[in-house]
Each structure stands twice: as C-alpha cells, then as structure tokens.
Image (cartoon, rainbow over all chains, first blue to last red; front, top):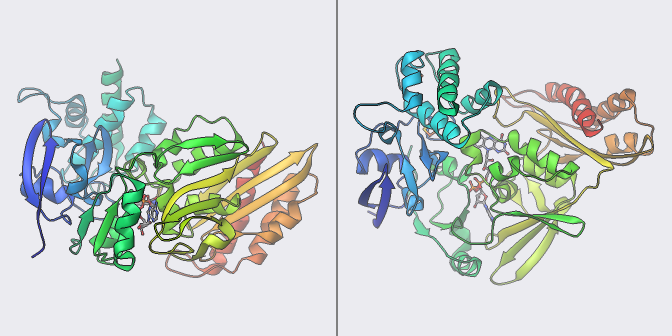
Amino acid sequence: MSQTVPVRLYVNGDRHDIDIEPRRTLADALRDDCGLTGTHLGCEHGVCGACTILVDGKPVRACLMFAVQAEGTSIRTVEGLAPDDQQLHPVQRAFWEKHGLQCGFCTPGFLMLVAGQLEEKPETDEEEMRDVLSSNLCRCTGYQNILKASMAAAEEMSG
Amino acid sequence: MKPANFEYVRPASLEEALVELAKDPDESKVLAGGQSLVPMMNFRLARPERLIDINRIPLLEGVESVGDRVVIRARTRHLALQNLSMSTPLGSLLRTGAAHVGHLPIRTRGTFGGSIAHCDAASEWCLVAGLLDAEMTVRSQARGTRTIPASDFFWSIFTTAMEPDEILTEVSLPALDDSYRTGIAEFARRAGDFAIVAATGAVQVVDGVVRDARVCLGGVSEVPFRSAAAEQVLLGQEWSPRLLRDAAEAAADEVDPPSDSHGDGEYRRDLVRALLPRALAGAVR
Ligand SMILES: Cc1cc2nc3c(=O)[nH]c(=O)nc-3n(C[C@H](O)[C@H](O)[C@H](O)COP(=O)(O)OP(=O)(O)OC[C@H]3O[C@@H](n4cnc5c(N)ncnc54)[C@H](O)[C@@H]3O)c2cc1C
Ligand code: FES
Ligand code: FES
C-alpha cells in the first residue's frame, strides 16, 4: 500500500475533500472518489476523448492528468453543464434535438469538448468545428449529427 | 490500465525542482504536460518512482524575442504556439506546426519542451528544432546550465543528450527575417495523429535565387533528418517548381526509412517525394 495524500477538488462549484494515491488519474478520482460517473473512460491514453472535461475552462483529457495536479483548479464535468434541473445547456439541447448521440458513451466527452470551445469562441465556424470534433471518437453516429448539433449550438450561443 | 505507484513532488521553483531531481535522478521523471508520459505510465511502459511536476513553476512559459533569436520557454503549451501573434516566417511555422500536434485537448496541456525532451522522430517540434539548428538550454543542480545544439541533442528515438538530472528550460531559434519563407506538410491516417512522414522547409530567396535552404524530415529515421542532399540541390539555384521536385527526389534518394506497421520504407520514400515540394511551396509563396 502506498501513501495516500489529501486532495481538495472543486468540481462544478462543489468542494470534494478526498484521500487518494498520487497515481489516481483525475478521471478515476471524479468517478470513484467524487461519485461523478458521467466522465467516461475509453482508451486511457488520450486518443478517444470520452474522458474530456474542462479544467479552468479548457478541454483536457482527464485520463492524462493526475488528480493531485488539479488541486486549486476549477473543474467542470458533464454533471455541471446544465444550469439547473429544469434546463439543459445549449450544447446538450442541440445534441438532443439534432440526434447527436446514439449509445451515448462518447457523449459526455463531446459535450464538454464543444461547450469548452463555444464558451471560449462562440463564433467558431464549421471548418474549425470539424477540426475540434476530430479530437474525439464516436463509434455510432458517423459524426454528421454531432457536427450539426455543434453548429446549432454555436448559432444559439453566438446569437 | 492504471499507472504504478509513485511519489509526487510539486516544486514551487526551478531551483527546488533541480534539488528534488538530483535526489534520485535515475528513478525520477519530470512531469510537464503529461501527454506522452502519462499514456506510457497508464500502460506501464514507464514506471518512474518519483514524478517532479513542473506545472506550478513560474517563468517557465512564454515566447520572447531576444535580438536576432526567439526564445521559447520549455513549458509553453502547444495551444499558446497555435495562437501566437508573431507576424514573421517563424511565427507562421510555429502556428502551422502547432495545428498539426494532436488535438485541442492535447494542445491545452502538452508542451513545446516536453515534445523536444521526449524526442519522437515524427514530432513537429523536434523537426522545427532540427530544421533551424535550435539551441536547447538545460540545467542541473550539479553542473549548472549548458546549451546543446540540435545536431548534438537528438540521439535516437526517445533518447537525447540530456542527463537524467537535467531540466530543459528553454529553446532558442533564429528569428528568421522576412526574406525567409517556411512551410510544413505531413501525412497521417487521421487528423491529429503522429505523422507517418512530415517535411519542413525554411528557404531564403533573394532576387529569385536560393541563398539559404534548410530541409528537415520526420518519420524517416530515428531522429529529425536534415537532408543535406536536398539542401545542396536548392542552394544557389533559381527558384522554380522544377527545383522543388529535384530537391524532393534528392531527399527521397538520400533517406533510408524504416518499415513498420504504419508503412514500409518505399512508401515513406514516396511520401517524401510528395510532401517535400508541398512544404517548400508553402516555403516560398
Ligand atoms: C492523442 C495524442 C496525439 C498526439 N499527437 C501528437 C502529434 O501529432 N505530434 C506531436 O508532436 N505530439 C503529439 N502528441 C504528444 C504531445 O505533443 C505531447 O505533449 C508531447 O510529446 C510531450 O510533451 P508533454 O509536455 O506532454 O510532456 P510529458 O508527457 O510531461 O513528458 C514527456 C517526456 O519528456 C520529459 N520532459 C518533459 N518536459 C521536460 C523538461 N522541461 N525537462 C526535462 N524533461 C522533460 C518527461 O520526463 C518525459 O520523459 C500526442 C499526444 C496524444 C495523447
Ligand atoms: S479515456 Fe481519456 S482519451 Fe480515451
Ligand atoms: S454515440 Fe455511441 S460512441 Fe458515440
């Protein structure tokens, strides 16, 4: 057994005080220690994007950061995207309306990727959005509806 | 998979980081963006006993002009280089290079210095360093600072001239003036993947004649490959599309690329023929 260290994480505005080994990735800490299982794990080497979350507003791979490294940062996961229980985030609503998901495994990663991009740059055009979407993998949709949904969200968020 | 146990150290200054690293250099690793090291740890291809996290050390990030050089500090993220507002041929090369490195969530974390220290022969930043004869500044507690030119720095795949107790602090590049043009072209199976072959060029053309020519290729050897043959073909000649093809042909003859699951040697040679003219065409608009 190796030493655990106390780590304080701020996730979606909530404080989580957890005791973990330094080798615990941020993705695993969110899922197993904070109980936030919306962040998914596919490949654990940065390729699939299922684990994409926002750290200080920027999309990162939660499988490639250790939870200890996230101390003092502001973390957002898919659970924190909707403003409240009654409403969806514009990106969530667009994925719903444009059928941007099928099985849903990749969806939290895509939602955080696109939300991070559009909150930083709402006027993202289609060419740039294609490049952003190439970050993540989806085995179901064929990407066209993900692109449509993302552009619909862009229109709403820039308008 | 999950990484093996390690001790985590988060120094607040470079001096402290060097002291921590010196305690057990062979079993320690510097953690920068983690975009190469953490995948290797997740697969247990790397099992460092200690990680020295340099992410909270001040003054290790940013790009600065110093006389006729441009200095890139080691922890400068790929994304910062993609968004660089430097309207010179070097600025353009750095922006296009960054756009080829992985994807947005890789670029928010991954660092310029991490790529150079990691030394993947297809990495955009290793190519740029080879192309422009970059100078790497490294520091250790025991021996202080030393500067290593690119020609001595890249030894082999994942192996550089750095000692285990050294930290790369900055990389210095020549600030190419407006008589230079730069370009990069690469082929990968999917956008954002490491290139199978990548070609970069920096060419100075004065009154239609090539005065300085640099060509560096990735994916054809264990380290960034400066094609002396292509540079020889270009130098002193009148600029023309024909010249680009001749240079590419010379480079393709000169390289002896490896064969692996991504492509055999002949295929890589063909890619050199196809990509080098594109990189050089970008190089002279
Ligand atoms: C999905 C994916 C796609 C990618 N595609 C590309 C691509 O197309 N092109 C490309 O070039 N890269 C690509 N990368 C790799 C990425 O660019 C990494 O950021 C880079 O290779 C390493 O930088 P890092 O800061 O993440 O370093 P780390 O992963 O933190 O470290 C890498 C190595 O360098 C050492 N190191 C790091 N910084 C220093 C320093 N300052 N001093 C001494 N040693 C140091 C570490 O100890 C370690 O051995 C990709 C990565 C992923 C996950
Ligand atoms: S699980 Fe993190 S990128 Fe695939
Ligand atoms: S919806 Fe199934 S993987 Fe994307």
